Amino acid sequence: ETGVTQSPTHLIKTRGQQVTLRCSSQSGHNTVSWYQQALGQGPQFIFQYYREEENGRGNFPPRFSGLQFPNYSSELNVNALELDDSALYLCASSFASAQETQYFGPGTRLLVL
Amino acid sequence: AQSVTQLGSHVSVSEGALVLLRCNYSSSVPPYLFWYVQYPNQGLQLLLKYTTGATLVKGINGFEAEFKKSETSFHLTKPSAHMSDAAEYFCAVSDRTNAGKSTFGDGTTLTVKP
Image 1 (spheres, rainbow over the protein chains, first blue to last red):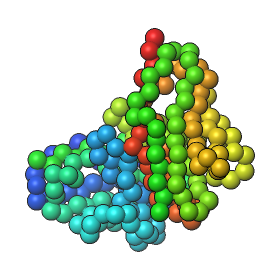
Image 2: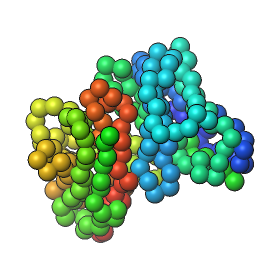
Image 3: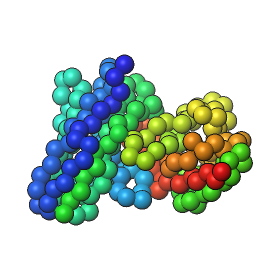
Image 4: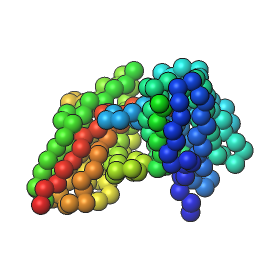
């Protein structure tokens, strides 16, 4: 059974650029949630995708957007990067019927200069 | 709205001593409660969760936590610390209809001294 994978592991961008982060869910999981973890803080919920549609969003602006594909892989896109977007981005997958058991990927560490 | 407060950003114990990491939550509806562990440069691993039923929950690696509704607490304990327990620990809460949209505390770094 393959776990949750994320790519890339590290990324450096400059302010104003756009970035795409990718997540491959654990086999069979049809729900994916994305979290932002700033240095020294706990993860903050960005949004969740189910059946290729956004299913709830946290307190993040529209320049944070996502996609979920038929194979349940997912992308997080961030436009107009700001310095404060520097963080570890985590995705977590689960079955829709058992969302209380989320499996987290190792994360993508984004540095915005 | 929900929130989590983890009391003590750093906890240090000696190997073999009791581990106690404190978590208090706020929720207007019956919560789901979680403890996760994060090792350096890794994602989160679920240690244990409370959903319904027995309020004393046992997890992996010898950890357990007790849901106390009257105290709005979900403290994590382990009778005897191992060096391998050194990591960052996060308490999280969600409501039952949005279990995949958790609110996390700021974490507690556990140091284990030999």
